[in-house]
Length: 368
Image (cartoon, rainbow, N blue to C red; front, side):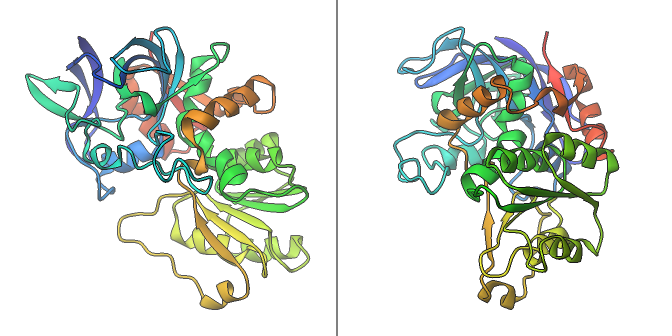
């Protein structure tokens, strides 16, 4: 079938919306009609050429939600008409990582996915008869996409699909980092660095975990107001004095849990330094630039602080994304407040501009 999609032709250049051919789903795959796709920093990171694993040309986009149109042979958990969230972090349920409650890093299709292919080592996208690679196994800046069954989370049909899209990446990453990676305990104190979608997700996750205090840090007054809306109890403009402020607010000890959502290695270090001596846990969610390193004074660690990384918030996609969507439907998460701009596919590059200007929280590409 012919579809319209946003193609990354060259790093550092705007995406180009054009017509491509999308093949039928094969064994274990499903065809999804996209309803909405969030414009995520990871898309911009790859488009800029900063991602050492990036490749072009390809169809970008990974934060999608839509409706299953057709399924291939062997698909047992999805049917046409099902509402789904796309998963760049699949869940096969069978590999050594899926069987563990310590990680969500499914290894079933990772190698081919990282190369831009579907599990059988081929693509479903072509242009002029030439194959075009998929992005993160998803390629959702497009009217339709073919994805593996294990990379689709079936969600409640009652949930508006535009609101489901952020659960495909940014929102789940932040919420999950608090609930599943750090496993925030009730009554604890948390500090969140960066209040974009991922950081606000961490604020929400800390609130859902019944943290007593949630300290939020950002350069933007507007984003700090958003943080308060979603559950932050204290806010501070980012600066070199933030570590001292967090320590002062916590009796000189530091926060029980800190979360970094900027990708800035200086801020990452602040997150470690402001974690509590003896048991503080600093969780890193932001993606640093190519070649950058995080320097940590060893004494911060041998006195009890710990550092963890969090990929997709530790969320097991097919199992736990539907649960998070249900919590939204139950009124525990204000998703509407996070959706800032709605754009057509032709305006996808405007989404990157809004992101770089920190205008709003999440822009969506919506499909008629």
